[in-house]
Amino acid sequence: MTTTIAPATLAEALPRIRSILTEFVPGTGERDLAFEHPDALIQALADAGFGRLRVPVEYGGFDVDLPTLFGLLAEAGQADSNIPQIWRGHFTTTEILRAETDPVVREHWFRAIGAGAVFGNAQSEPSALVAEAVGESAGWGVTTTRARVGEDGVRVVSGTKFYSTGARFADYIRAAVVDDEGTRGFVVIPARHPGVTHADDWDGIGQRQTGSGTTYFEDVPVEEHGDIGRYKESLRGLDSFVQIVHLANLTGIARSIVAETAEIVRGRTRTSLHALTQRATEDPDVLSVIGLLEARRLTAETLLRHAAEQLEAAHAAGDEAAYTRAYLDASAAQIAVIEAVLDAATRAFDAGGSSTIRNSVHLDRHWRNARTLASHNPVIYKPRVLGDFLVNGNAPVPGYYRQRPSVVTPDATVAAANGEATAAADAAQNGAR
Image: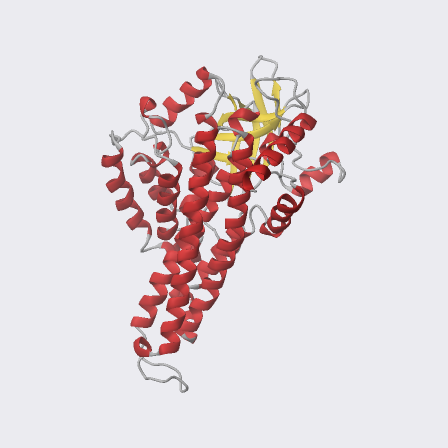
């Protein structure tokens, strides 16, 4: 947790946050090649109040709206696309806490975050481990990490997580667990307990500095007030939120592609034999590439803003139909933004010639990072999800609702959740006609 003097207001925090983001830029490409984590800079962002953006003012936060949050995450993604992903688990936790049904839990953790605490993520598990433990017929979203009561009466967590993004940078980890009764939930555990081991084994082609490797838990105690998001009411809109974080990051990448490729063109001293001019800065074909990149950036910017506004509106409306609409719009935006940014990351090389493929130019990192982000929450399924809703009125059931009871009906089952989602689909479909 930070020990420096924290900014008291958003107006004070923003210049500090933006100043630190500029510090990421010079070494971004070198860190990517060296697999070097930006530990000190991430801590500097925390000290500047970055993690407090969505915390209510009464708990020491800035209470920004979602369009503002995602706009700042796009700025962070432009500086270094690892930043939004490192912080994704933290901001997901603050979203859960904003809707937390237990006021004591909500206040406890908001005060901790308002004082500078940072959260990491530990939800997913290695597929081989899941298959070995429960068999291939276990279904979706299986959790093998256990929370049990030890001999001393203290609940402890043991298990293995992968894609544990941000955990190595964090003070606390929000871990998905299952208890002895088979109930799934989130618990808060200390990230720096001796029973926590962070293996720096993430070998992805992109997003190399996110700490998204394996994390091992061995009898790690659950924190006081450590059960969060027990009811699905605390998880509404979360499927949209986690996707829009990636859209913000992709938008930041698109901005970098435009800026860096334009700079490459300005610095070119020769061009192709078939060019219409010897100056790259006057070559109409090269200039057209820059224009196309800008069009792709604008596509990403516009759809990011729309998705953020739709989720903000869903929170204001507070009904399942609005959350369904927000998720569908986020899914449509996901399809188009990924296509736009991956296309831009490929076309950028046409503007720079063979010199742009050199490691020292670092232009390739944009495609690798965008491709890695595009592989999360797989986009391959989203066109069918949209089509099924538009044709048949079938709304996707939020993944975070699985095996989560309702605070209104604590014994609610998955079937009940499915029924509510169907009703939401009918309402959203009627509203769309």
